[in-house]
Length: 222
Image 1 (spheres, rainbow, N blue to C red):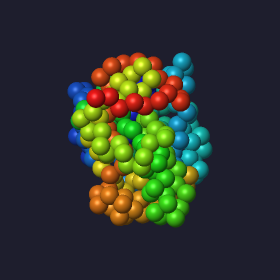
Image 2: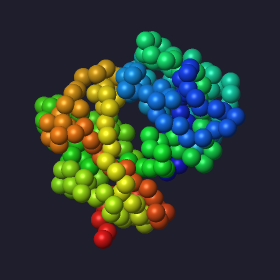
Image 3: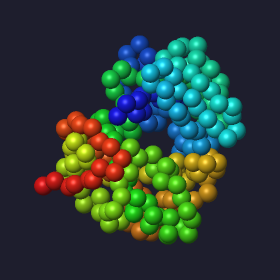
Image 4: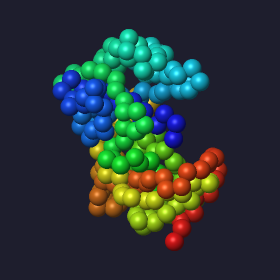
């Protein structure tokens, strides 16, 4: 998926080596789990111009080319005030050519079932944004948590086919509002009440490339 997780924000003690860039686990980077205010950052991508515009309710908009060293430093200064001061601070913007900076050691995309999301909202008695789960594909018209039965199966969406690999374990990042960046919902507690584990959504890998469009059906294959 174009520009999906193309960049990551390495913290001041990160083991990421810009001279030998390679995938690293999430704890090498700044995360919403430790700096909840980052949850309220939104990004507009202008791919033809190779630029992104970042917005946050407590910061002025910033437009940069993330691959420009000077502009990447502008981003670090922009994000510093909304990073948790008691945690490792952001140090540099990094990427690995040809590899998305996913939470998984394999190139994954994440799938969220909207009815699973709605069940969490009902359990909490709060209307939550599905953006808390940071899914790549949002699926409708499925029984709540039916995606948990897909591990090892294939899913056809549009012209693409995906192999469902594993459940997505959730962290404190989902407790923060995408509107304010404040922790305002016990999403992990709700998931444990419903499922016995703090999991939401599934990770998949693309096994057959193809175009997909909003509204395309999702079909579980044998």
